[in-house]
Amino acid sequence: MARDTSTEILAEMVANVLSVAFDVGETVTEGDTVVLLESMKMEIPVIAERSGTVKAIKVATGDVVQEGDVLLVLA
Image 1 (cartoon, rainbow, N blue to C red):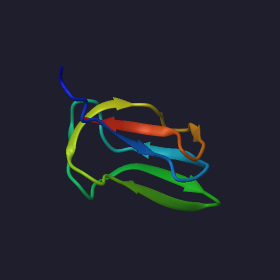
Image 2 (image 1 turned 135 degrees about the horizontal axis):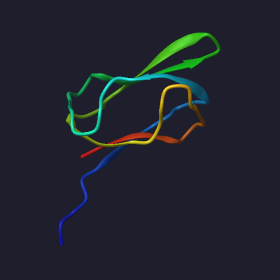
Image 3 (image 1 turned 135 degrees about the vertical axis):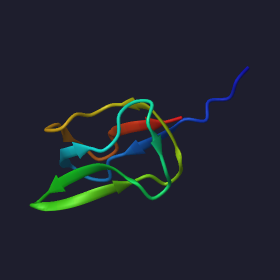
Image 4 (image 1 turned 45 degrees about the vertical axis):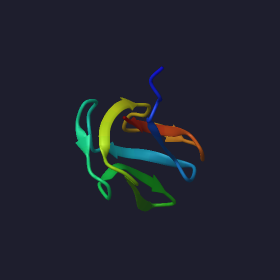
């Protein structure tokens, strides 16, 4: 049986999604900004903690996310 090595990138706070920098299938490098959030008039970049391929995007520009929500999944 194949082991799932996917990594979920989570929101660390309640925020609005300003932009998603990658599309499904694109390669992300560790340190890339994958999503840009806005909270209390501050822009908060969400940084990839590892390299991988975007498997799924769970949010869209304009969405409001809660702490712990999945933003995207890397394979």
